[in-house]
Structures are given as structure tokens and as C-alpha cells.
Image 1 (tube, rainbow over the protein chains, first blue to last red):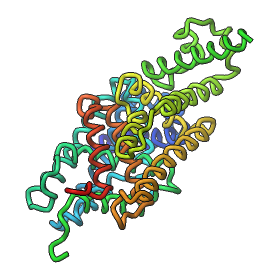
Image 2 (cartoon, helix red, strand yellow):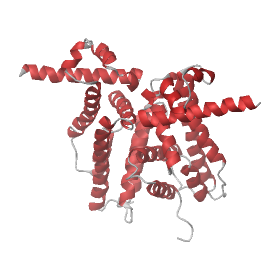
Image 3 (tube, chains in turn cyan, green):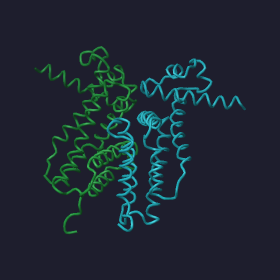
Image 4 (spheres, rainbow over the protein chains, first blue to last red):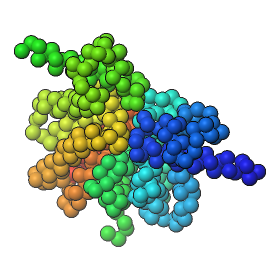
Length: 201
Length: 201
């Protein structure tokens, strides 16, 4: 059993080395040789963990998703949607160094998936899962009567989801302009614009 | 003189071949050899047009920007902001095949620019120019009294710009979900949400 654990740990170590190579040199430089060097392994030993470069990259891509899922699973939701929705979105957008690194790698994989069918399947799965998040947000806001009446829900799902992806990309490309604080304020403002004014106001 | 014209025409032909290679095979396969083959030129003759692969890619990236600028320069603005803003945005988002192809290539360059300083400068210039578009939109809506009072203009600039980039990326990745019609409706809805209700309503 310890051997299996070590094997998986080693695969994770290789995936993390792949992320660093992608961030420093770009995905086009993420060769088995460069990743082995970054991981401090011999090129020969890489075969124990991944049989092809394609398998390695696919694993490294899925590992990004898994990290985000694990963080979301750890959120202590309060039951108050106006607090919980920003908490959830905070785990998707790059509000700190770790998430910024992840997002840079993810973004590279997304572009690569446009010409690489091995990566396209997982990219679509993640896109479906993220769209489901925004479907759920809009449906719950509607169900408890917080959403403004007469919203085109299908359109609002896409508008919210597109805003979040746009903010995430801008934060990666121009961190000095699109800060974590600005992203959070934009999320808050957007959420408020979808909801009825609080009663009493 | 005809020689100079032909030289520039030939450079454009090579840039367009580079775009096709990037879309079919990814930017990591956009070697001088692959681009020459796609353009129907010998590898040797490529040296007449571009001295390095880096110069070629930088030219091909700037050519995408130039196309968008040329389309925007051709718009017949009416003076009515509620019509003109959607017209302008229509030239930035991938509402047809040509713009979708452009956006796919642009997106690849953006990711490459994250680890390639030769491309990063132009990417920032374009980002600055696009942000200026949204600064101008928000300022004009405010100046003529159409914008809602009490908007946080700096935040709304980023929210609008991020929405547009998010929509553009989603339309490239999931054209069956994020159609041209949906993007246009999202732009309209967003614009309306920033403006006072029309008088008389």
C-alpha cells in the first residue's frame, strides 16, 4: 500500500512541476524533459508515472480542477445566499497568489484544448460544471424571491458566468489594475443588481 | 514601388497562414516550417519577409489588432449611444465566422504573451486601448445624463469590459451555447442595467 501512495504523490509532484514549467516557459515548452528537470527526476524515471506527455498534461490539467473542487468542498456555507455566493466565487477567481498561479496554468490548458482533443473533453466538463454553479445561483435567488422579477434567467446565468471569467482573465493579465478587491466589489455589485432592494430601503 | 507593395502583401499572406496553423495545430506548432508550408512558400524564402520566428509571430499578432481597428474605423455611428455602443462592441465580440477565427488566434497569442516578453507589450497596448473604449462608453453615458446616478464608474468600466471578454471567450469555447444572439442580448441587457429607464416609462 505505501508504494501506491508514493506513486500517486510522485504523480502530483510531477504535475506541480509541469505547472511551474507552463507558467515560466509556456505550455509549448512543457516537454517531458523540461518537466523532469523541474521535478528533479530523470527523464527515464518519468515513464513510471506517465506513459506519454499527453497523459501527463491531461493529469496536470485535471489536478488544477481538483484543487478548486477541494477548496469549494471546504467552504462553511452560512445559508445566507448574499454571503455564500461571494464565498463560492472567491474560490473560482484569482484572489491570491496560489489561485493566480492555478488560473494562469488553467488558461494555458484552455487555449491548448482548442487544438488538442485530448484536453478538450475535460475543458468542456469543467465549463459545464461552472455553468451549473451559475444556474444554481440564479435558480436559488429566484426560488427564495430575492431575484428581481422579469429577469431572463438563461441570459443572466451567462452574463454572471461570463463576467466572472472575464474578471479572472483580466486579473491574471493586469493584476495591477484588476485587484482582488476590485473583483470582489464587481461580484458584489453584480449580485446586488440581480436582487430586489433589501426590504426597508 | 510595386515591389514594396508585394513585399507587404506577402507578409500579410504569411501572417494569415500563421493564423491558420495556430487555429489548426496550436501556437506551439507555429514553426517557420509549418507556416511556410501552409503559405505555399519555401522555408528559405521566408527569410525575405521575417528574419525570425519571433518577428513573424509578433507581426501576425499585430495584424489581428489591425483588422479589428479597421472594422471599427468603418462603423457609421449614428450619434445615438444606445445604438452606437452595441455596434462598436459587435466588432470586438466574435459574432461571425471571421471574428471567431480572429478571436481564437488572439486568445492563443494572449496566453503565449504570458511567458513571452516579445508579445506581452502589444498585448498590454491592446488591453489599454480596449479599457479606454469602456472608459469612453461610461464617461459618455454619464456626460449626457443617461447613466444611473451613484454608479461607481471605475468599477462599471471593469465590469462591462470583463463581461465582454468573458462572453467572447465563452463564444469561442462553446459556440453552441453562447451564440451571437445571446451575446448581443447580454450586451443590451447590461447596457440597459447601467442606464436610467427611458423617460415616459
